[in-house]
Amino acid sequence: MVAASKHALRDLGTAIRLQRIAAGLSQDALGRRAGIVGKYVSEIERGTRDVPFSTLHAIVEDGLELGLEIRMATAPNRSRAAPPLPHGLEKLARAIAALPEEHHARMLAIIRLALELATDGSE
Picture 1 (cartoon, rainbow, N blue to C red):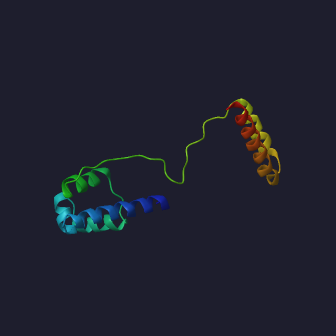
Picture 2 (cartoon, one colour):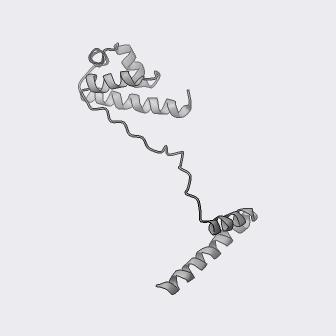
Picture 3 (cartoon, rainbow, N blue to C red):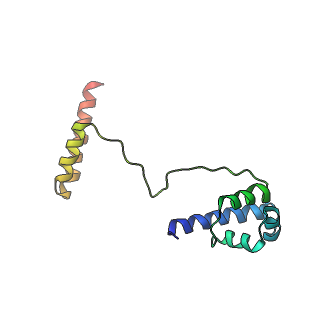
């Protein structure tokens, strides 16, 4: 199992445990309501057991009497690709990237200054 998946399972297990405790239920009681055994609830809460969607749905909706809402978001360590640059900027970016790294900061400072000068005259 990938480390990120293990982390997500632990987070899910913690969320289930907190909701179970808030509802005043034991692991066995939650298991009975959800149609699973208490030992399985324990494994889920510890993040040591993968949870099929049908089981998660039963735990949340039948066991905890909550609504299950699914959200998808970009993972913090993954970003979406930036939109493509206009052709002229793409050429400039490639030219700067081709320079030795120690010149990058100086080139970016020059570009910032040029942009400031260009916008000062237009306002």
